[in-house]
Length: 291
Image 1 (tube, rainbow, N blue to C red):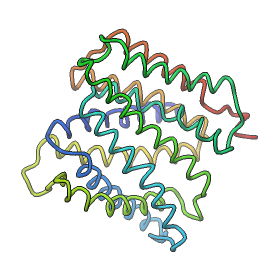
Image 2: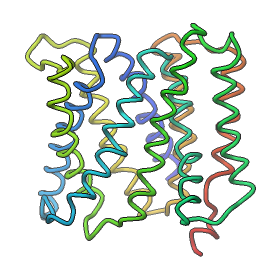
Image 3: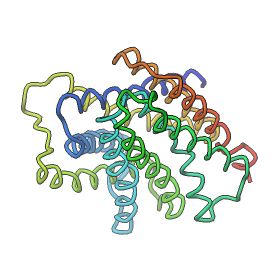
Image 4: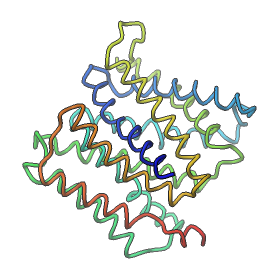
């Protein structure tokens, strides 16, 4: 099972690199998000139909689809692409690792979790890591881009809020793939007119190169690793599955170094270590899950 976690990290961790390739090719966030939603919808529809499940729920599921689409796809992906346009892909991998650190205080505010000094300290470690990246002049290739570190932080904030949204409203009888199917459709409906109105639509009829294949690769990998993640939760439990955060972050930095030639200052490496330590502290323990 640990091999599965390692493979998930290796595949999921390459997505920031693919995102970087897509935006460097001139593609804009809304157009990329639209086609990612379309690909996710097609894959989810095929998988759902193959299992003999109904493709869509009733009217009572519309709010669920909308919430997951906004908090888990459109908004976090938009800020991820804005961030990766201006920041190294490896740093984006570190920033995305803040998801559990944002999820914990949101859950605390909503009354889903009890206060824990240890986990609060873990969240503060994440905050400290961000200031290590954005603060010292030597941490970023271009210090003027520091503002984009804080803009990119909105992505893990929305991802962290997504889990709490689902916990608050419930799956309403749908399995994860059915939810993903509906959310992908809503995401496509929301982003298509926005992409067309802002000139960000990606024309699929032009000759394809690395940027276009990077869009497809990001969508397929994200979908596949999400399905695998749900499978791991079913086989080994959520606490074990949450360890994928380490491998995703680590592999994200490694892929950026290998494929994009990125190199980082000691400040960034210190932030990387602080993030991993923070993840360790904020993760729920087995006893908490059982309680």
